[in-house]
Length: 144
Image (tube, rainbow, N blue to C red; front, side):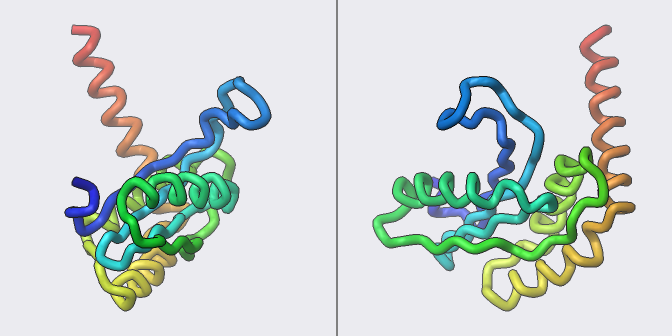
């Protein structure tokens, strides 16, 4: 059913590198996005360290989704200014993609320009505060 969607958002974390170790790594979040109408995967990574992992995942998933070769490229995103806001950047990018819902090459180009303005460190910090508030709210409900 993923092929029937306009956009597929796939948050990725470098949780385990099974080729070199079985230990959990889990240090960096990024966003792999699939645009079925374009048969294209785009990796959005504020830390520039997950593109190879995203490419490998896209190649595997692309083989399941379609018989036609899929393309892959690294998208343009602002770089995070610290070592801990990758998850907030990832959530912020998903929020913007859901709001804009780009499906054409021109709309995706405009999305990447929007990221430059809307995925700044201050915007990531705001998203982090929102996420922390949600987690505290959920934790409070669990304790009740």
